[in-house]
Image (tube, rainbow, N blue to C red; front, top):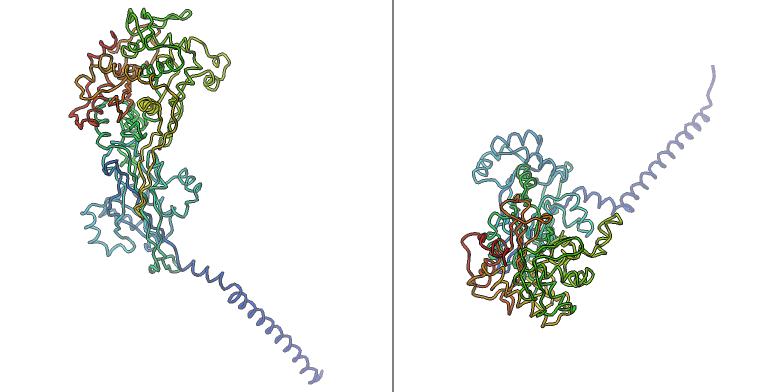
Length: 631
């Protein structure tokens, strides 16, 4: 039997107790140190984290700015409508709830698809639309059954609307759902915070170019949320600021008159105020209804627009590049006067053709026009005169002079995506073609340049700018659609000041020669039938641009497929002695300029200068065809 020393036993116990006490004290010190770290040193950090979990910022999208014409007519606005919205965090079974809602409200598969996409992009406590633009009957049905759908509410929202429908669609453009490309633009301008909660973005036209003016400033609500992310109450609210309003230089009624003048024909028209560069009308027909795109266009409507042979989505005024035909001749004549290659009274004998090497360039009039001076060359639109002139001037001189009027360059109009067109030159040809034999400029190619054919290709906007500059005696203004921008907060209007881009150094006596001849076009020449009986004096020039080569044959409109018929063009300004309006008209496959394009210009001038509203589209003057051929 072994005996244990009591004192030794007590001593061992004391040692174990001391170790245990030390361990407990150590743990307590660690705990206190952790408390100090969390409660004192890291206090601000964790307080912020807690507040972030408790409070969430919910964006409030601003009202988009209005677009108005020069007279205050609203062209793009917002209207209020009821939407059926779901807050996902407050709904136990989302799919089942939507199925039940569909029994009392018409919810299409596209609505479900859009809602699903919005849910993926949004926070759980945000209210998301499942159906837009509810009818009064649908609102009443839901209200009667509201008790069955916790987390589902009816909200009033603003929607974009274009009251004129398809009229002016290419200048206004449209808005659509924000996509990745739009997000890049937003990021480039560091506007991410301002676009939180915004679903739409300008896609084309003014809606695109002035997106960041029209958008406004996003507001926010500070929402207190629980641990499940459900909204408890609103703590604070910063109201959104509506976007700025745009007042245009465009006359909405003139725009409507111009578009209706085309009837069912394809084409474009640009009308400019020469003294300021303000665009009075910008037409591209056929157009489209921009209202279709606001909530996302359906596949059937998109297919009809995208697959149409008439290409209604193409802005012909800015993106269509066409040979200018004989509308190029006044500028060629002015170049000849300025360079000293021709005098106004200097005449040539026109046999009806011009031989260059082994090729014969033919005039439209068989047998020719006889003796032709500069005045009659423009009035009668004599091709032979300009074949000879182009050969005498050479391509370098032609290109240098025409570049001053903006041919072959973007005009800088405030719509994105403008085409450059083609001002032919040896340098252009070297850039355009890769093979050495294609890059060489041949002297024979210069001949057709003189009558606005060959490689020449310009937009109706470029033609309108050139004729407006001529009407304004060489003073060029940048064409623009916006007259001023109104700040919706202060009411301050920021004007788009009309400042000349440049003044082309031209002799006034030479300009007067060309203007006199262009007046003669509408009095005794190819535009006389269209402007018979006009109560004002208009200066103009008809043009006809070949779509395909005749290879020495004779053009017969009736025996040519519609898509291969010549384009009809007309440029003009009025009144001739004090121009208030200058324009360019293009009718695709319209035939002769005097036949299809000039009558459209007459209706536009009659309305703008006299207030006459036509009751039907401009007629196609068949009698002018024979007259133009035989001038």
